[in-house]
Image (cartoon, rainbow, N blue to C red):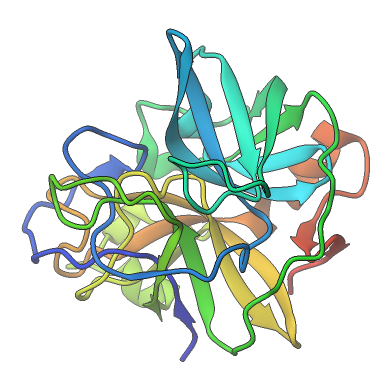
Length: 269
């Protein structure tokens, strides 16, 4: 079975309403392990400006030199945004970072912040200039991962360093069945987790990375968990299935815009 990375280990919780995973004061991801620096070269930190400073709120995927894919709920509030590429420690500059302003935000036209279960939680960010693509080291294994920054425990301190953890994938029939997410989960979503590890606040918009034929493909965009907590029983983390939105992404960019894999694009089958 494929296993996906997120980075949380929280106590099992009870309620079942969806909850977004953008940054919050109360909690983000818990547990997991620190990723090797620059092992996920397409991972970005999405940050908003408050006063004279910028703060991490979501993740995202560099899918082209001038474009980032993230979750719609991360950017449906008017703010001044920037994207940080090549980051590992969000509190310290290490020389590998690229700081890019966002010139335009394109939210899927069917996204409705009041109807999370309707799906379409996806957005594209047009960068003000193109990023420089560097040849960073890629992970060498056959697992699937999601990565991001998060707290070391519920209500604890934010992890400065990029982290990762893994989750079992839950098939759609199971995830959408009674007693699980039910009709909340649509076919344009992917479920993973529901055990001791899960996505949590701060993971939103980040990539669900999977090794396909020896190359890394982004299969999903981190979207939501249960409102009762990040690893509630039979409420696995839900991702927007990126392959369901290729046509929309192409229409926004007026060009071939598929999956970023080490500086190249390819379809995700």
